[in-house]
Length: 167
Image 1: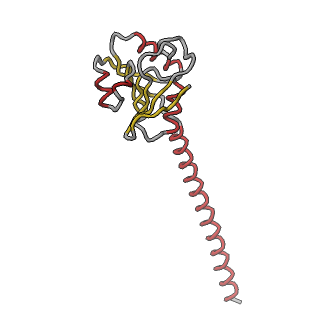
Image 2: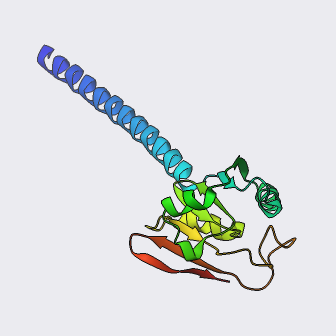
Image 3: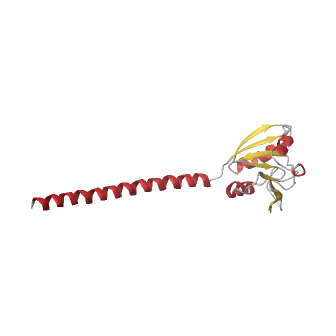
């Protein structure tokens, strides 16, 4: 009888220990999942911090910065009369220079690129150095109150220059 009671007690402790272990493991796993989900969500949200190097006398660059701010970006403006040299050093093709150079989330953006194209860039994260909208198109943000018509934006990087967007 004593043996049966001892065996039952040991079995009860073993079952209780197994339940406690399973509950603890489950709690730890769901804690990891929550942390992992939060990290994935943070990575999925594109940065809204953008730095623009611009010629100090360029009014369209100020208008463009205000346009970006109106689209939720936090813009840092840096006066740089040699932004074109900085642009070429960043990989922007000389024939594709825009009126300023910006950097956002590891990418370079040259020119008056519309916000929705920048957002697609930092969300899709292609393996390129950046994008450029050459020159100062009259229908681009910063030159016009809002984008009208189509604008051709180019991607540049180690693989050369390709069309990124034509919209």
